[in-house]
Image (tube, rainbow, N blue to C red):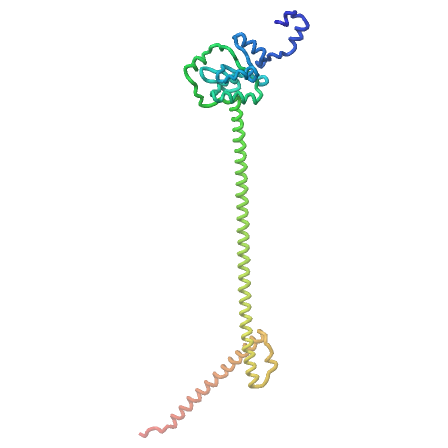
Length: 298
């Protein structure tokens, strides 16, 4: 309205309309000048909280009625309703109860975060919330959260659950792979055991066959030694036999034994007819003797 006083058709007014306003925007932001002028309508005054003027008064924050806080383009109110303080930040899901002991710490924390804090001086207009809270006090069971925090946690939980599920599938795949590898290892170990058993059986069979060969060689050696001793005895009785005293092979020994047995059988067969002739002769002689005996006289 003040710019239009110079004429709405003036170039300065048209330039002013084309430029963005420094006192407000479409998001609902207002400058401190606009808010100060709006509060003055209600007879309220803004005082900078950390100014020398206010700090010199040494006023306890719990004795004030309201504070407004600004950071960049965001404003919110801390107000006393009844006998309790509330954080009325529009970024929260609801009003946040602030105790009297925590109020000074909360304001100091906001200052460290870069907020500009202003004290509201004057008589605030009455409201229904202040009338109700003047009668009864509020007990807050759960503190409000930032808007969108639940959605962020929900999405984070979903992503975590999805990742856990994927990890679960991955672990199951790994377990299945480990089971298959274990089965293969057991099968290979069994094959190795079978091969070892077969090799052990083969070694035992070879050892037994070698023991049998050794035993046969020992028996053959014993027979050879017996033959040698017999030949030596025969040589001492009937003269030396150098050709028979030499070491005989097993095959020659077998042949000699077979020839010896054959001679024994032939001699036994020759003795059988002689014994038969002797018996028949004896029986004839016996009959003639009986004939030669004198017969008794009649």
